[in-house]
Image 1 (cartoon, rainbow, N blue to C red):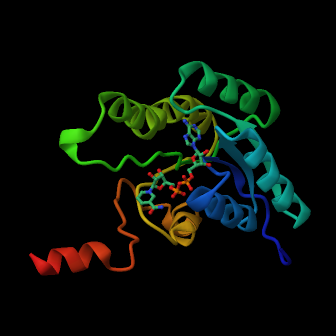
Image 2 (cartoon, rainbow, N blue to C red):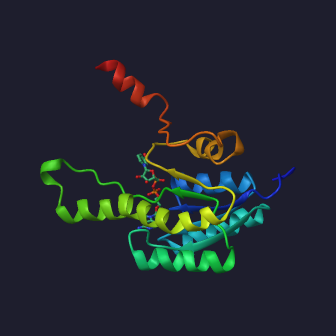
Length: 182
Ligand SMILES: NC(=O)c1ccc[n+]([C@@H]2O[C@H](COP(=O)([O-])OP(=O)(O)OC[C@H]3O[C@@H](n4cnc5c(N)ncnc54)[C@H](O)[C@@H]3O)[C@@H](O)[C@H]2O)c1
C-alpha cells in the first residue's frame, strides 16, 4: 500500500470476514478508509483485520449479528466511543437460501429475511445519525454475484458523490444475457 492517499473516513462492512465482504474490506482499506469488519464470525473478522493492518492498512474486526437489534446497538456504541464516525456502510452480510418455493421451510425464510433485510435496516438506522454528524455518508447494499469490490470503491469515492439511489448490475453480463433470451 504505497503512495497512500489521506485518510478518507471510517467504513463499516458487514460480513467482511469472508467472500465478497472480505474483498470489499481489503479494497476500501487500500482506498485508505479505516475499515471495521463486522461479522458473526468474530475470529474471521479479526484475522482479516490483522492481515490488512500487517500490509499497512487500518482495520479492526468486531462481532455483530446484524439480525439482532441488541448486537447492532452494541457495535455502534463501540464505534461511536472508539472511532466517533461512520462515513461508509456496506450492507453485505447475507445468507443464501436455495430451495424450491414449495419446500422452503418457514424458519429458513424467516432467518434469511432477518439477516438479509432486517439486518440492512438495523445497520442503516444506527449508521445514519453518525453519518449526519459527519460531512459525508455512503450506504451500499450488496446483492450481486462477484467482483464487486471495485464498484463499491467507486461508489464510496468522491467521483460518485452525485450518484444516489442506483442499482448497478455487476454480474459479468449474467442479467443482460437473461434479458436477451426473453
Ligand atoms: N456469492 C454469490 O454468488 C452471491 C450471489 C448473490 C448474492 N450474494 C450476496 O452477496 C453477499 C456476500 O455473499 P458471499 O458469497 O460473500 O457470502 P459468504 O457466505 O462468503 O460471506 C458472508 C459473510 O456474512 C457473515 N454473516 C452471515 N450472517 C451474518 C449475520 N447475521 N451477521 C453478521 N455477519 C453475518 C458470514 O459470517 C460471512 O463472513 C451476501 O449478502 C449474499 O447474499 C452473493
